Amino acid sequence: MTMWTKPVGIVGTGSFLPDNIVTNADLEKIVDTSDQWIRERTGIEERRIAPEGMNASDMATEAAKRALEAANLTAEDIDCIIVATLTGDMSIPSTACLVQANLGAKRAAAYDLGAACSGFVYGLITAGSYVNSNIFKNVLVIGVEVLSRVINWQDRSTCVLFGDGASAAIVSTVAEGYGMLGMDMGADGTGGMSLCIPSSGTAMVPNDQRVEEGLTYIHMDGAEVYKFAVKTMGRTVLTALDHAGLELSDLDCFIPHQANTRIIDSAAHRLKLPSDKVFVNLPKYGNTSAASVGIALDEALRSGFIKRDDIVAFAGFGAGLTWAGLVMKWY
Ligand code: UT7
Image (tube, rainbow, N blue to C red; front, side, top):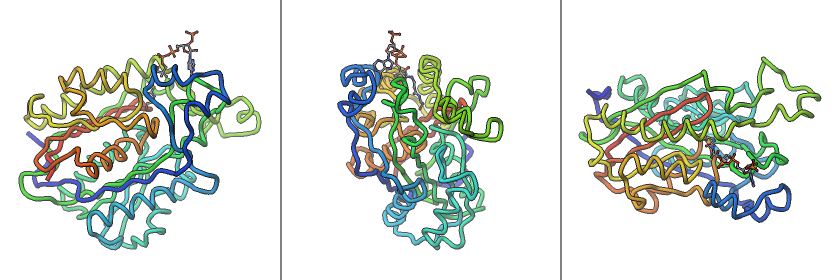
């Protein structure tokens, strides 16, 4: 039933977080919020913020170098670079092309992918399809965000939630019997305006007045997105498991998009997973959108949370509205 006809998986991962930590106590000084509210409603304790001059392409390049090292590959081995982001350096050139130049990945095609917080999982599935169909051998998937630059730091309903960071994974052929087993990708554009940056493209080109009105920042109907997330995150894993011909009881661990511990707990409950099978690093980094699943994956691998032969589920949801699920056997 699975769409993959050969074993395609992840052969190396990397991540990069800026050093600068902003705690909930720091935010108490700039907006009417409290450490207690943020912890209880979201699970977040602190986030990383990129310093001025550090751009998405810089963080993406660093994460990519670490993934190349882990995979024991060089930049010239990469055939394609997909950068999932909503906060790229600029609209053209793509951030993927900037990363290609930084790495010296001369043979690689390069483009950006716009699926917000689902972007990393969308990217893994897309990369897996390329490798499976022999279009490319090694695909570098990157998730990166500098959300701190599109947040209204006066709006307590959004500014406490997000952080900056980057992650990377190299998708390639793996040993027989391992790799991607099942997937699910979807979107519901009718809910798109519940999470948007109104003045960020050609429909409403940014100008002084729009900047003044805060239209160049993230606007979110938190309750709507919350309902969507709770409905979607468990379901997308169940669909991916079904696609893989596996049962819930086959799952060894879960790497969810890190947006809110209440959303993660609800998905884990639906998947009948105890908390020790769910990887959570949200308290340290906040919601890093497209980077979040990849950062969690990199930390889960490096800490030994994911082991050989584990059946691992990934899930993302976010603006669009979009969602994606992926089930893999780790080798
Ligand atoms: O990657 C996808 C991105 N987005 C998400 O995943 C977001 C999904 N949504 C959520 O995680 C939650 O809806 C939030 C964390 C954003 C909000 O939590 P909530 O439990 O839905 O709170 P709420 O929006 O219903 O607000 C409850 C109260 C309100 O006050 P009143 O009207 O009850 O007096 C808010 O004004 O909390 C207030 N509030 C805050 N108070 C202190 C909102 N933000 C804050 C804040 N500090 N930062």
